[in-house]
Amino acid sequence: MKKSEAALQKQPQVAGGGDPEIAREVRTIIAERCGMSVDAVTPDLSLENGLGVDSLALIEVNVALEERFQIVAPDFAAPEQAQISTVGDVIAFVEAQLAARGGRGGAP
Amino acid sequence: MIAPRTRAEREAASRTPEEQREHERREVAAHYQNDPEIFSMVLDSRLAYATGIFLDPGESLETAQERKYDWVRRELDIHPGERVLDVGCGWGSNLIYLAEHTGGSFQGVTLSDKQRQEALGRADRVGVASRVRIDLAHIEDVDLEPESLDAVLFVGSIVHMHNRERIHKKIAAALRPGGRLLISDCYFPARARGDRESAATQYIFVQALGYCRLISLAEELGMIEQAGLDVRRVEDLTSSYVHTVARWIDNVRSNRARIDARAPGFSRLLQTYMTVGRLSFARRTALEYMIVATKAGGRERLGVAPSPEPGRAP
Image: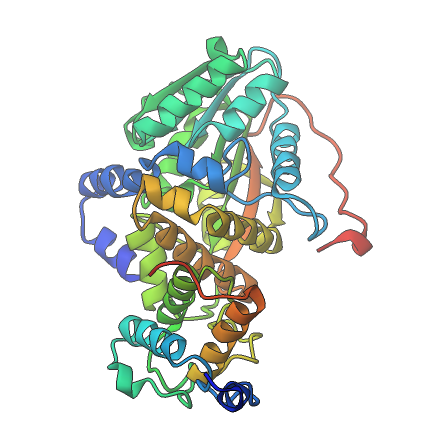
């Protein structure tokens, strides 16, 4: 990867603008838990209103992401959890956790 | 007759009492038949599967559970030779603590043979096996002599029992004058909050735990009173349960691979249902109470337990 490209990727987080593989995996996990197609799970979709699911599905997304990426995530279903409100926020959160740890999660 | 609040309850209401008992025997036992080693990675060292009592959010789970065991010991005030029944005794947490700290004689009841074996093993290791007996049975099938028991406890267990009225009458009749009843469990607020028909409710009540019935505190107290007992105290432990469950979830996270090695997918079930529970208690759409009631007569008991200093409350 050329330096300029690397710099481009370090631009301020556009939702889902980091590692496309991670974004795809997060969207796949959300799609599976919420009974949607991956293409329909776009970064701008609101967790609370856009997915059309109840708190159980969101909790299942939480647990599945924690399992897959070996991270600890806040409860997306909790009302006090305001910082993560869209699919893009979830993707950015996972990317930030993995970056802080200096690598991707374990084997799928 | 209390109107059903959930799908699980409506289904229970459509069964005969015998069918429901059989349903509980099978469905509730399934969760507790998982390897005790798994629960030892998640719970405190004595394996209490119920709330502890936190005075400070920074305390350890072990400290909070120890405080609860000791609170139960003081409430039940068991004298040497007194007979105690622990209904839904689990892996023996309260039963063995009480056997170690009092001179009572103990009978536990559980639906899970794995729990029974684990509890008996633990009783043996701490040298109280001669005063501990554990039956594999549904409480409705256990014969209890009238006025034969000095104390009965249900800690995190009565929630699995549908036919409450019947159970309260049976227990009240089996208590001696001066006998004590202690319940620690989950309740719904009397005025509905949250969605009791949600997929999350169904998941925790049926898929994860087999069968749960949450009634309101007033309904439980009413049945206790109708059975002839006098309510001595009620403590709201909802906030403590939020912290207890949060510790369990952290323990599931840090032992995920070891749990799944013993039961594939079980860490996911535990974390999911515990998170549903934690959020419900945090939002107070479900409540956790400890209830103590007594049968008239026997020893006089004066005094009340003081509340903790306000600054220390979580």
